[in-house]
Amino acid sequence: MAHKVLLTHPGTQYSRYLARQLHKNGLLYQFQTGIAFGDNSWQAKLISYLPGSVKNKLSNRIIHGVPGELIKLHYLEEIKALRALKNGRKNEDVFFERNSNFQNNIPDEMIKSADVVIGFDTSSWILAKRCRQLGKPFILDVSIAHPYAKRTVYQEILNQYPDWAFALEQKDQKMIDLELLEMELADKIVVASTFSKNSLISQGVAKDKIYVNPYGTDLNFFKPVEKHNTIVNFVFVGLVDARKGIPVLLDAWKKIPKDKAKLTLIGPISETVKALINKTAADITIKGRIPYDELPAELSTRDVLVFPSYFEGFALVIPECMAAGLTVISTPATCAPDVIDDGINGYIIPCGNADVLAEKMLTLINNPALLKTMQAEASKKAQQFTWDAYGDRWKEIVS
Image (cartoon, rainbow, N blue to C red; front, top):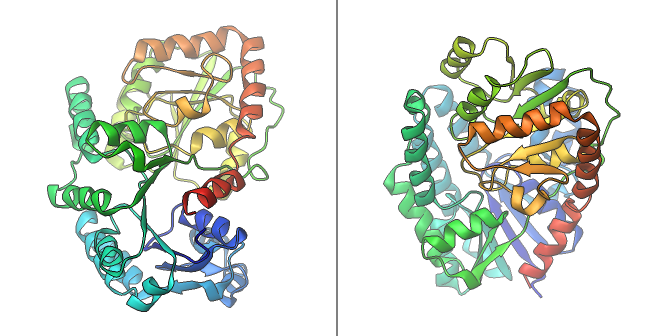
């Protein structure tokens, strides 16, 4: 078994959960990242005393359960990237520059000293080459389905909803080529869903080097709450855009009686998308982005997550909402086939089908006893998806 795992990620996202699990299992050699702090660091203590808004922005930079001495920061590159984004530079260009510098700045000696190296998609093409040159096993964590599959899906959305063309920005071929190189060089590839795995296989990636490891949910953070709503409260949580199925949801919402249901959208949203929604469905509540710490309180008053996405890597919000006692309506292009038992704790509907989405929403509106049973079953099923289980599977993968 590998006892010294070098984990690398220039940003944050869920890599902090992997760092914590590797350390818990005695496997983390070092975590090379942009800006992150161990919970025993002076920076973490300082953040706890900051005003609420600033504290919320910085809280996801704290990695609970990982000593600060195991975290190596590349903070200058991260600060440069954040400044460039603020000044309006194109996201793809900024992150290409940041990720290139990050990979080049990891010392050879650190790679040589590790038993195995873990990197993440779009930030590992240089690192993977270096590992091969130095004779070190490299594992690639792929956070979303294959980029060529995404290109196909975007065309389908464009055909179905041409008014949403502005929200379907295609990735540059240069970046796609680098992702393909990462997959080719990786000794093992880890994805979070069967959907992602199948998308890679369909594009020629060797099946025997792909491992499915679903993400976990913090069951102390997301807990079921007894609900006493007089109408069914539907909620969408995530980036409010076309890829996530918002046009489909808007079409379905037209068929729902407004005296029996309410719909709230929570997540980042552009002014253009907000204006489009307000123009076509003024009765939808748009909350916009909220601090992650506030999400459980928001979910405590909701009944059903509607997440009709066309394309994901996993969609962590699905098991999080299930853990919070919501039933879920989603599609096969998410973790739904891995998490949801169709008709028992949620529904899996075809991508892009507003009629079926509306049908399932109406079923739950018209059958309150069924909704309550499915909510309880969703909460029960979510108990299987913990970060500890995720870490245990990683332990086997790196062995």
